[in-house]
Length: 326
Image (cartoon, rainbow, N blue to C red):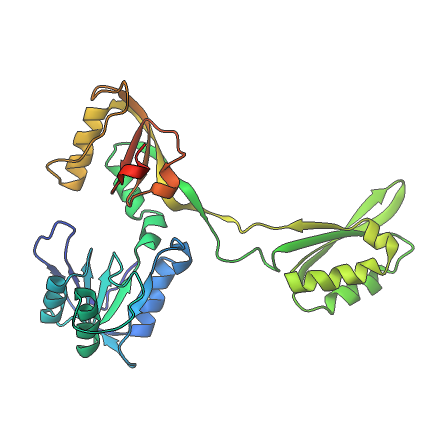
């Protein structure tokens, strides 16, 4: 995603000094910028438990000249954003996760909301949407393993059903029925689309196979129409359609290394990739640092819901609770 019109100020995950990217020439309205952010990573990709998108919105109109990027919005980071004259903060982790029953000066999260609103600073969080997208956080983490083929552990589905609705109805019109009459009746129904016909020869008789997509409400109307004509109803098939999977999109990654590597080698690769001096390691029964690894399952977060039943030689996770350990 390109945002050439904004000043970008980033705070890295490792708390290094902020980086200001210039030059500036234009500004964006907050609504337009949020639309661009949502187009880049659809909010429908987020996990159901997550809280993503525009979390704090100053009263409109709100013009964004400076966008401040951070991994976690703490009070110190908020102060830095205000000093940099930020108009919008993009915080990877949502600073508002659980519902707030009041907005007072008692807790740091409430104070963040107060300071953002008082200073007219918007707050946007992408969180698991950036985990799910192609070349997002999980794919970036996978590159630290070395050459590999990575596929989502939990593939994402499109936000909508195929054109026309979640149901497909197919039925056969015999030569004794008026095809034009049947089609005109179906065409007149709302929420019915993708009507297609093709010739069919059944038991030596030339007939026509009709196929259509429709909504749940329209399905009831279509079935009611076809049930009035026994010959049509007897040949009716109803297929429940699934939302299509999105290529290279979803939670976690199952990575097949092009060449097997030992646990110790992969540890060093990940440390170099993440710029960390150490990482935590739990060796499985009968395993050692020299055990060979071909398949790695990873998730930038805890991955408790997707790593649990995944067979792998090595698991890489951002955090792991005792009760969800393998």
